[in-house]
Image 1 (cartoon, rainbow, N blue to C red):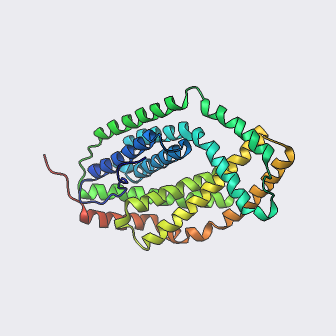
Image 2 (cartoon, rainbow, N blue to C red; image 1 turned 90 degrees about the vertical axis):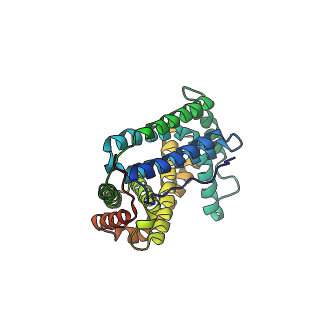
Image 3 (cartoon, one colour; image 1 turned 45 degrees about the vertical axis):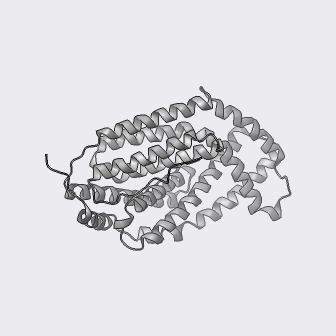
Length: 311
């Protein structure tokens, strides 16, 4: 059970950008370590919470990437790799939730237990996924160790920027994030493959993190943009889970053919409906100019920033 209060996820200005970044990052790392140690919570939920923290860390790194690109590349790779290693610990739980959601959505068309053979076969697959080269507890311990290494790496953050330099780094980071969002949406529209939709999902997530981190400086209707991005991220996350489940059905062929055929048909219909829900959620954020948004944030941020002390 988490005992500390929720970590702040804001770059509020009023202190140098390096100090602000370290404070936010350290809070996220502490929170993830506490989630790992929470043995009272179900493992899939603990892992899910840690993976969300890893995404928040990578979102922070993207916002400040132009303050120190070497630091960005090294730390982004660190947290990406940790998340990748933890992924199998959550996948079985995510599949169970997805089947439950599918049954609820199509309850009128399905009986009480429409996929018994598939579900039995999936239950047999799950333990093998979790085992890997090291046991679960060893993996969690190694994850905590790697997070500690990330906390230690924060000691190298000493940018000593002027307010103008700090604001400029944020402007460039935000502009890059919005450009990536626009490009990923355009690509997904042209070819809505699982890979392209997954890239769009990541861009939506990182734009949402940017609005949270820079809430005090974001132009326009920040609250609506944040709300729409959250909803779009959840839809794209559900599409990603559907695509991963479809891949598993094709590769592993769990259960009887007739059950898999019904599942694939329902998933395809559901996926199509979800894709149609996305575009209206993008209107407000895609109306923003990357360059003008970055400049607005830079100007607002610079006015609140305290310059580093001269030595």
